[in-house]
Length: 124
Image 1 (cartoon, one colour):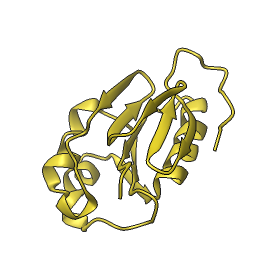
Image 2: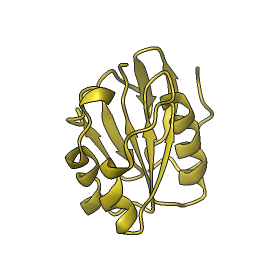
Image 3: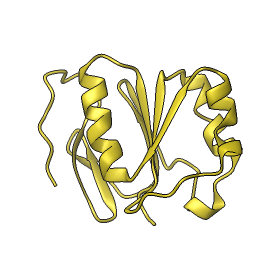
Image 4: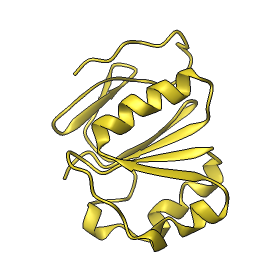
C-alpha cells in the first residue's frame, strides 16, 4: 500500500508497506528497524516476536521518544509487560499494533510534530 507524503520532507515518513517490507522515504526495508523523525536504525536486533527480550526495548530508552509504536508484523501480538517495563517506567508510552497500523499511526503523529519511534518487526 502506498501512503500519502507529508509536507515535512526533512522527516522520515513511511511511504508504503507490504508483505515483508516497508518503504521509508521511498527506500525499501526488509529487515526489522526503528524509525524516528530524524533517524533510522536499520537491522534492529530484535529477530522474531518469540525471541524478544527487555534489552530489545531498553535499546529505545536513549532515543528519548515520547511514544513507541511497536509493530508486531502482519498480525497483532502483545509482548509480555515485563519487556516494556523500563520504557513505561521512564514515562515513554508504548502502543502495540500490527506493522501496517504502526506505519500509518507513525505518519499521523510525526505530522503533528510528535517525537515518536516506530519499532517494527517486518518478518513474522
